[in-house]
Amino acid sequence: MANKAEPLTPLMRLQRRRRAAKAFVAVLLAGLMLLIGIVLVVNDGRNYRRLMIWIGMEQYLTRPFVAAPPPPALRARRMTLVVDAPARLTEPAAATEDRFRLVPRLTAHERCERLGEDGPVPSFQAVGGEWECLFSRELGTAAEPSVLFIQVRGTSSSTFRTFRLKLSRLDPLQDEEMFRLVASSIDRFGLELTPDNRRYLSDRIRAGNAFSSKMEGYRISYERERDDDRRSNLLITHLPQISVCGESVATTHGYPMQSSIAPVILECLPMR
Image 1: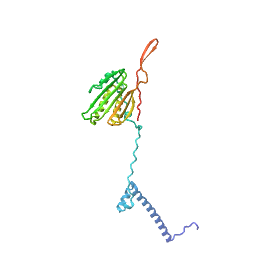
Image 2: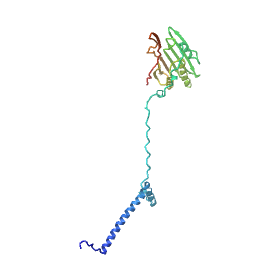
Image 3: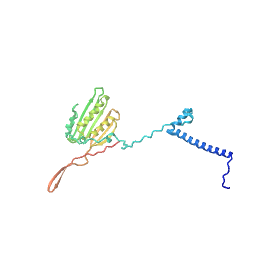
Image 4: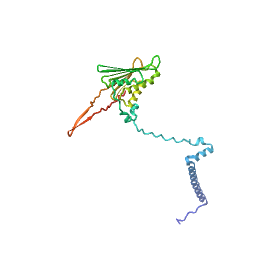
């Protein structure tokens, strides 16, 4: 019959058993290798490195362990602009009570006398509607003492035109006393400068750098003499008011109303 199975000879049965055994061994080896590979690579290859160290082949077969680089540092976002400006322009503004303070209204003669409160008596002269105040003080006991010379000139009884200070810093030991006396002289004479502008002026004089600034109705310039760096001149010029202030009279419903106008000085600071 055509569908009848062919008889298997003993040789054919042996060959079939061998093929089945080879296939089983291949599948078993593949599974075993897969299992070994999984065991070796888990935990970042820790078992693999242990095996290589145990058989003494770590320097040939194990991959070098390199620590992961640290994450890049986050750059802090700058919240303010970088401005190359003096500290007085970037510091917080002065308090209101420091800016608007009452300055005693004194005559030119009285303001001149205040320069010599703790030193020599100033000299005051008034001729032909103009007046001049002179003050000089020596500092130190050296052969060449430091000298502060002040010359103030004006044309009215309450205002001045020029305020000149000549600093002769011949004795270096008296520099601090010279700077203190310059600041106190400006304050005693009654120059209406804010605390910020006073600090700015003091810092520029200490630094010894020439400058010219316009502030609060004054033009202030500072420069050293060409022939001697130890001598310098500080000139403060009173600028005339541009706006006219006074009193105005208005009428409302037949009743007169009077108002006063007060000046508010707004100035700019030229930078060099």
